[in-house]
Length: 593
Ligand code: ADP
Ligand code: MG
Image (cartoon, rainbow, N blue to C red; front, side):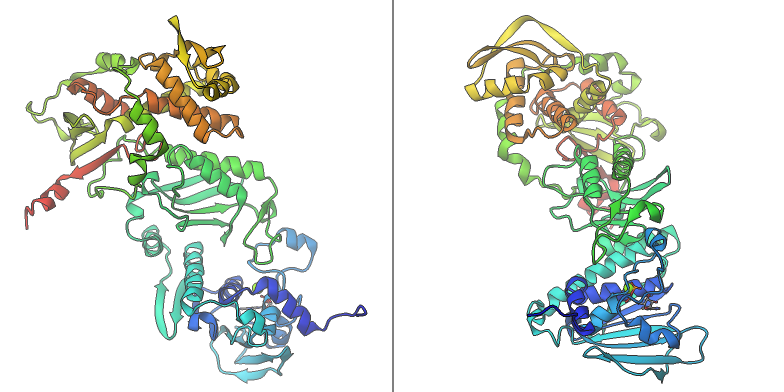
């Protein structure tokens, strides 16, 4: 074949291969055009999952009669005119290829009325040919209809899925749009039925109502609001408390300058911010809005513009990470956390904790009495509060600490305490583990994890593999307070332990930490590694279940939780406590009915 210039229609069909993958792609392009035209009311109607029809009606600026044919041509756009414009682009579209691409693989009807004109005009595109504009009765704004997608490209039509599947994609993208633009009112119709309707949400409470419509009612009561700005960047939105995590990443919405995007820099910053508080394999839920100057982000890197590139990826990453990290740190047991009406349980994968790797290694551990330095310190700081007994005079509600006063211990596992709202149940191991971990971390950050020299160095028997691993991790473990030397092919001599865990059984602690490292240790990031080690030490060195605590010790633990960041979950993302408020208890007993 000799080289030739391809006809326009074919060029458009080739471009359509990138831009129009399935019905939802047409919905996305048309809605973005409506948004770019300043529309505040957008109605999307589809039939048969969009395979037969996609119609978008808006009340935007409209297209002047003289531009109607131009709008359907390749590389024709009203949004940019120069490279400088491209670098500053603030509109959703700018490539001028959506309408011609869609028109090349479907039957497209376009009708529009510009505000300055007495009536509207309509054109049709069939097989790449644009009809003469004709007068048309239409309100100010634009209507685009895309019928029989891929009717002329049967190979592609075959790839379309069932009506339901295609519609699910469309429903999903409309949810994204609805969250991206609270100021716009949205209607989605499928086969003549209205399936989604959102009024404009101009107040915080209306926004939250819309949010609940997308996320479900249970999201908001457990959402933390984020609002941070720094050096031209701003982040706002909502993040669910880590204990309301999900098995899928299906409740994650991230917008950059109102555009929904997937981005590795963002994903990494989010994952890192949650690393400490989320159980491995679970996913956080959030709707987050990042705003930055258009020139700081390149949106022209993906044909469907689902990805972006930040000019300063490091800065964006660090900003996101620290903003989220701070927001999550506030999820403690301190004031304001005790919320009446909180459900009894979160969506926590309890089944994952019973068995499995860490379950096994925990079961072997039975650290005698790890009354670590905290407990000694507790005794000193216990004020009058600690001596409050349940039978004593009822304390003033204002004096009751958030997690209340301890009443008793249940099965050596849970602490029962009474606070202003009712009953609090605390998992003492999970709570202690979090407290220990946060302390180790803050000391590590200050580079003074104090270690304590053992009076008699302890010879720890290991397997050959463990001993090799110990040797390999020697530097990092020493930085975390575990200091030893190799003493034989299958042993090491333990010389120092972290002072915070001085009461723990050193040999066991070392073996447990090594076994965690063998399973999860990846040597990619020093920071993550040291946190992993600290987390593992905190877990294995904390108060175990089945240890009797005195009322004073329990109160001390509760007061410590109130002071500790992120104390709402243990290091694995399990909740550390739940509130059973009086109204819940009343309901259990059908009281007041
Ligand atoms: P792009 O959005 O990249 O400019 P499109 O092919 O999607 O390219 O649209 C071409 C042009 O048609 C737009 O630049 C705009 O001027 C006009 N247009 C398309 N849809 C609308 C609409 N709903 N309202 C007003 N103008 C529109
Ligand atoms: Mg467009």
